[in-house]
Each structure stands twice: as C-alpha cells, then as structure tokens.
Length: 199
Image (cartoon, rainbow, N blue to C red):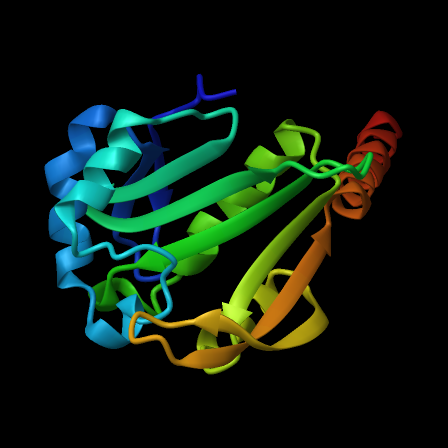
C-alpha cells in the first residue's frame, strides 16, 4: 500500500511538494513543524505537540496498521501532517478517523485538500467503509474544507472538546461514506471503459 511513496504533488500555485509516510528519523523535523504553529492552531490538538516527548513517543511507536501518518514536505521541511486512525469498534464496518494539521504559510494553497484526498484514497485501499472527522465548532475553515471534500455534518456534541487550557467547546462530527465513493469511482471507470471501447 505504501509502495507508491514518496510521491510528488502540486499546490494550487504550482509549487511542488513531497508526500510520504512518517518515519522515526522525522523526530526533529516534526518538533520544528509543530513549534511553528500559532497557539490558536495548537489549542484544539489532542496532544501537547510543543512537548518533544510527545513527538518522540509518536516516532518510537509507529504502527501503520493502526495510525498511518502522511507528511507533506518541501525543501526537507515538514509543512503538513495528516493521519488516518483506524477505529476499533464492535461494528462490522471499518471506520477511520482523519486528522490534518498544516503550516500556516501554506494555507489557502490547496495543501489541506491534497492531504485530505491522500488520506481518503488510502482509506479506499484499506477497504474502510466510513471516514470520520471530529472538528471543533470554532474551526469553520476546516469544517468548510471537509464539506467541499464530500463530508457531511452528522452531529454536534456539546462541550465534547477540551482545549489545552481546559475550556470546553462544541465538537462537530462529519462523516464520509467510503463505500459510496468507491462505487462512484468504479461506475466512472466502467463508463469510461465502455466509452473508449466504442471508439
């Protein structure tokens, strides 16, 4: 599944970036990346990413079967981190949770969408049925990005998220039916094949 990495991608302004899985050697690059994030961006992250011990724990315990982190890199500098978390539930469905963090200097350039789509297609390859994104209500730009990617508002959970200072916030749960997308892609391929076979 990861044999296609590293791979090149292009931002909206034409700048090229590299997408690849996180590896143990990324520790210091990740520390630098998260230290550049404005406080308001770190406020709602689940871990205290300014603590180097947190980053060390990530790279020391990489397990792509449970958490698959994909990094965006330019000039040997990390500019984005997207993760696909495989949820363990009693349901027969395979559910993945998607989380994305991007460098403030690369926003509105299509980086978040590139990372989201990358995670999306990894979920397809892992035969997941549904993707979930949990976003604090105040992060309206993030919510809009996921909406444009096809995610739907499923529910609002009041006071579910707790920021780094202990304040509570409403949590928006958005979902995407991966099975439906998979069928759409298969149908499109079938139509294209039929079209070209007639010419």
